[in-house]
Length: 432
Image (cartoon, rainbow, N blue to C red; front, side, top):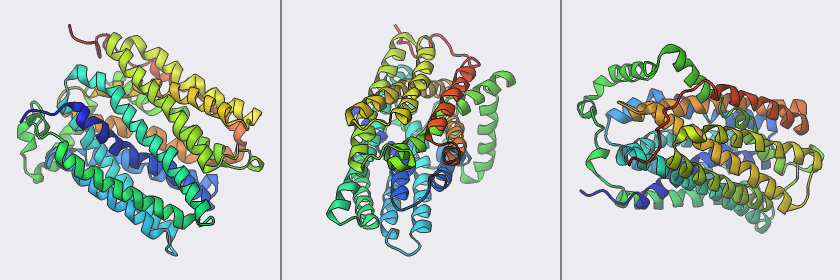
């Protein structure tokens, strides 16, 4: 069967990958904040929801071994829809916190598995140059899912709260039922449009492993781990792991606390934005900046090679964080000014995040690339999860102003770990 144009499936595939992630990592933060949890509790409990992305290499060989990437993508999209409906249903129950947290964890597990399959499908369907070229496109649509989560779902909850007289649990239930219906539609579309090409069934050099019996799972897992940790000499391997862990260290601290800073009232040190204002400033303008940065990063790396733009990307992902220091002292009320600050910071993050994505693609090349890419993303998520769980405690201990200053100081970590890695000068350049 002739493969379909990548434009017909990459955008929706990465919307489906990004949406549950933003729901778990950001929308859940806003929901729990509105339902009365403290920043310390929000960061700790929602931080644990990142665990499936950390440990997903334990079952990524199973995704490699059993069925096809396409099958896994479709199966997980159905499970994601079910978990979204579960959150909506349990919000009205007496055990709403435990029930929603369990559904969010199921959602995180399904999303992590979907990531393995979707990223593997992407790498198998596209050649090296197209992978680099479309990395900006896929990140763009991933970020459009973030815009939808932050810029549509959160404001929608705010407007429903006005309509239903601030019945917060009920309005969030309506939002999650709507999301469940959306995922059903995505599943139906992908069932028809995603190619069944030969390359999506097997990886080069691994066809026999694909057809192995499930009893071979443990040897396959051991082999995958061994090949991953033997890709580089021990010293270079250590440096690669440090880069994956700490490249986004400042972002790990900012992710949840930037949300609460924007929405907490002035009396608590925040800017006091309404859900609608947050949706416009952070969820729309900010994510547009992030999206444009991601597109630009992919295009620049595809034109000149990854190595040429590595250090500009490092500067882009760290230095614009200073806008939070400014806002915590100036306490602006002008939504245009706040949106402009978030646009600058998120544009830099989008450009800088391209470096991490490309390095993971570069590192994973070779046999078992799907599982190895999953290992890379898991290590990167661990670097987000652990600092993120402590970020609420740090913020409550220091206050927003001192917290953001500390984050800026810790940007030095990103520069240090980047000096340790090696990248082929030709990686990402278009072949002549």
